[in-house]
Image (cartoon, rainbow, N blue to C red):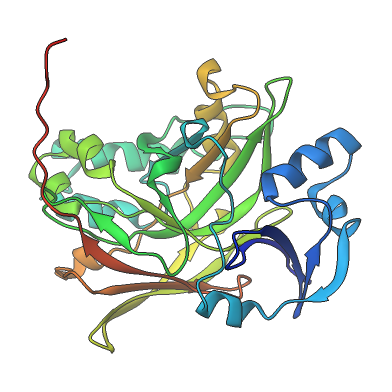
Amino acid sequence: MTATRLIQHRAPDGIRRVILAEGDAAHSLREVATTRDLALAAVTDGMSLADAARARRGDETVDLAAELAAGRLLPAIDHPDTARLMLAGTGLTHLGSASGRDAMHKAAADAEHQTDSMRMFLEGVEGGKPVAGETGQQPEWFYKGDGQALVGPEQPLLSPAFAQDGGEEPELAGIYLIGEDGTPLRLGVALANEFSDHVTERHNYLWLAHSKLRQAALGAELLLGDPPKDIRGTSRIVRAGETLWEKPFLTGEDNMSHHLANLEAHHFKYAGFRRPGDIHVHFFGTATLSVADGVTTREGDVFEIDAAPFTLPLRNTLAIAAAETVTVRAL
C-alpha cells in the first residue's frame, strides 16, 4: 500500500509550502502554507487530511532528497505560537523497553525487589491493551517542553551545558490538533528523536523529569492514516564520518505493550490538554538506546534514524550550548 505523507518546506526567501508525497511522487500544494493550516481546512470542509491535500495538489514536482540535503525541510508539524505546541511522551511502552531502563537503574529483577520501572512495565504488559471501548493501565508520562524545543531534520540538537549526557531515543511521535469542540484529532505520525539525558536519569529515577527537559527532533514526513502496526528501522551514531554504533529498532503496536489508543486516552483525559487550536507532539517510546550499550556521545556526533514506510532519514548533530548563569531578581 502506498504511504501518503505531508512535508513542510521553507524556501530560501522564507516562503512556506506543504508537499504531498505518495509513493515516489511529491507535489506542492496550493492555497496552504503549513500542515496545521491544511488540517484546519480539512476540518472545515469535512474531509480527511489526505483528501484535503489531494484536492490542493499542484503540478509542480519536488525532489525531496535534494530539499532535505539543502536543509529546506521543516519538522512535520509546528505552530505559529510556540507556546501552543506541547511536547510530551510516554515511556516503558515497548516490549523489551524495561531491560535498558532497569539496567540503567541497577534494578533487581526478582519479583520481591522489582524497581518501579520494572513494575510499571509489567503493569503495561498486563493492562496496556484493553478491549475496544475500555481504558487500560496508565503509562509513565513526561513533559519535554513547548514548540521552542522542537527542531527539524538536519538541524543541531542542542544539549545544555549543565547536562551530563545527550542521548538519542528513536521512536514514533503522534501529531495531534485539538479541534474547536475540544476533540483531539490525530493528523498522523512522524519519526522522532526524543533526545534525553540518560546519565542524569540514571543517578536517580526521580530525576526523569529533569532528564526530559531537552530539545527533540521531528522528521520531515507526516505519515497519514492509521500507523503501521509493525515498523522496523535503524538507529545509528556517526562520529567523524564513521559509524560508531548501530542497532535496529522496532515500533508500532505489534512491538508495544500498549495500544496507541490507550496512550492517547491517558494523555488527553486532562482537560487542559484539549484546548482548541493547540498542537500536541506525543512521543510513544522506544526500546533501543545506545547508552544501554555503554556508548557516551560527544559534541559533533550525528544521530541518524530511518524506518520504512518513511522515505527520508531523521539526522541531527549533537551540539553543546554555552554555559550561562541565571540570576533571579526581586521586583
